[in-house]
Length: 265
Ligand code: OAD
Image (cartoon, rainbow, N blue to C red; front, side, top):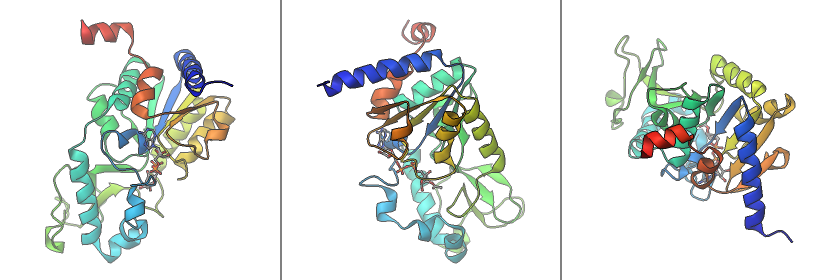
């Protein structure tokens, strides 16, 4: 019988080779990649959707019914995320994206940690579900970066648009809303051109994001999954690695010798 740690070692080695030899890589991430930075996931044992009802907080109807309550929840999450920093998995992905021209990041996360890890250099990660640190006017649709703590004590204190005075909302995609078509088109294009789609820390149940790995597969590319648990994608993955993002991603994306010299030398 194969010892589990030997099997894991072989899977990691095989995944490293696929990653090394791929000209085009798309990394698709979900809440699990930020779990070790302290950001709660949605569907795990302590997941947000175990404590809160998405219908009350993350739908256009919820915002129309009680904008103050919705802002209170997003304000709490914004403050929580402001205290978190990118972890070794975000950093390894950001380095690879800086160093390799065909390497792109597509995330379902709204925590901004991929962008924070990238800094000013490299291509920006595609944020399929928007961002907690961006706000959008419900009247004129203007968007702006917004890291301010939210005062949701009353309607009068909620964020407003500086241009037209309209009520602002978090610039995230809610249940029942369509993704930005330009962002989704770009993500689909990257997935179909990818030699490898590396899927990290997502339960792979929310579409269209969950379908991107199959776009790669159907176009002839490989899928590598890194997750602490099995998902609906596991059976279709070329390699499914059981482990945490922080443990596994730096092994799959080791720093290049030049970068290692720069950092340590
Ligand atoms: P979920 O909470 O559904 O899934 C998190 C996944 O991460 C699970 O499969 C866990 O097993 C895995 N996981 C947890 N900790 C991990 C770790 N340290 N390393 C690796 N994997 C780990 O989060 P998402 O799949 O991102 O949408 O959820 C998708 C969407 O559903 C979110 O973007 C959000 C949510 O409702 C919107 O808000 C529109």
